Image 1 (tube, helix red, strand yellow):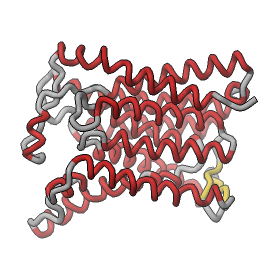
Image 2 (image 1 turned 45 degrees about the vertical axis):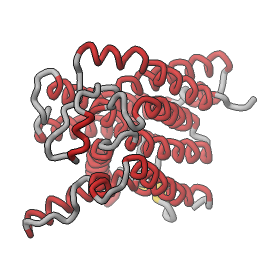
Image 3 (image 1 turned 180 degrees about the vertical axis):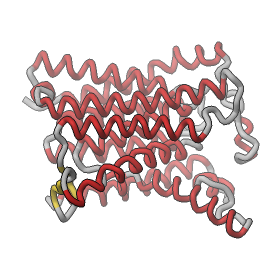
Length: 340
């Protein structure tokens, strides 16, 4: 029988995420959990002042419900997903990835809470956030290592031993990789619908990639992520009725990283998540260039703000950045398609 679990996960995740908007958004309005727009941002963003934030909790709920329904369905039908999770390694990697994403979400939630409730615009300090993120990433990697992950896949080379010799360097690089991409997704969330639209494309790429190698657990998780992103765009497309906040963007960052490790091909995220990388790089280049020359390399960073300052509409930014992501995703899938 055809494996329907990923389809069910995507549909449930979309319906729960989109449906929760009718409950969560009025509740956030009631609590006065509105976004404060910083003066350093584009001046036309000031009209978004007071839009409810922390809406990322809708996506979290959508994905968790989708996972629960998928496990129940697969158990009742004795599907491939349920059979796959009988493997202690696959089960550990699956659970560890979800827990890691939820921990990143919790860090984002506390950051949002401090900004909105405690009225401290910048939320957690950079040192506090960095320490917590690295702690979560280290715990996740330690779990993978202890569960039996001793190789990683590199296109055109194959499986590389990461437990002996020079391969051990994989672990500190992976720590920086997780930290960097989680924050890069956070930086991408600055235009209505951008982070969720880009992540939807990335999730679809990993869903296809997982399907090609027969990894049904990652296939299902990617489908749930894609469904949640589409459900959130329903409320977050311009003009946004809710923002995901760091609660959502940190969760999305954790999810895409967990999925890339879950499929055993973290390097795939470099191309699939090219927009995340470019957004983060634009910030680093802006800071470095300004420190050296006291001039700005971009009109504003992250890069999406630069294009806004050049006259692009938010819708155009989302469309172009999603298209670039699609190209990156196709490139990331080529080694799998060509069996390299």
